[in-house]
Length: 374
Length: 71
Image (cartoon, rainbow over the protein chains, first blue to last red):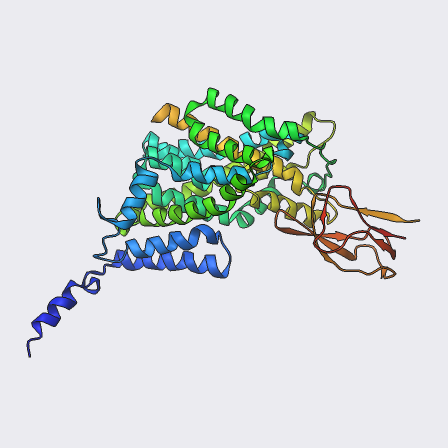
């Protein structure tokens, strides 16, 4: 019996081409899927990302083959060539976001800005470590804790780092409840953590409708490169607040954002073949991402404490750390830490102010990088 | 002396843990308010008896809305 045919078939399978790098990436993929399913760590992103990593690291599989691969086509047209997916996700995020807490207390915009401090710290450290300007910016933006903005910026400035920076951003967003509280406790006294804040003023419908229009105009005139993200964010918000396009608002915040999230996750995972990801620079990116995130937390807390030197009505500095853009996770963390110190202290809605302002802050930082470095 | 329990933030009533006429002590959990997909327990500020509950589970409430009265 001629076994050479069977041997030929077997040799054509991927089993003969599995490398050590493939196996490492499968372990990473399964770890993310495990964390997403059992610990509920950002499951909407980590399940498709983990699966994308797994598939793209199966040898001889052509899903990322240039011009023909299924995932290559998705990745090329929706991220690489036109950078479409992050702005569309932002439209959904805008339709889900309530900017009322920012309007009720506009100084929270500054807390959102201060929480971008880590972006710039990590940018400079990355430069000192030998990354070029574009790579350093893509690494620094991880400090904004905003997945779509990280992808948007990295796809344009340093696409070869997309997998690592996106994964770092989403990983740290999921770990907000672990990373932030020690920093918050270190930087504040118990008396400060117990500060109770007065109820914010009610915000009228006219203000809510005008805000997305004014914000788009002001920020896009100041930083034109931020327009794709900012305009889509505010369009989604206008859908939500105007009250006359409920179908559009519902679609943007449900079906559309879910569809785009599926493809975004797959594409980010597909951008992580072992050959690109398993390099020393990926480890640096993860470490620098953590530094960026930690310093962003520090920046928001520090500015809140500085405000209290001048304000008659003190703010609880714990809301400062909510300026990182992980909405509403960071605001929830502020509430958890505050209630541990005083179970009758409710700062959640106050923390939402800097939390949503942080989204604007991160988009502005990304726009600035694009203006200077594209 | 009666104490009004007001909603500290807008949200939804997730769980009501007491009944009218029930004796409660200071720091007993009265109800759970859900906001931003987070459960926020509301504690009794005084020892007393639940006089009246003005909301039911799944109700949406506004900030400072009366939830219950303890006397």
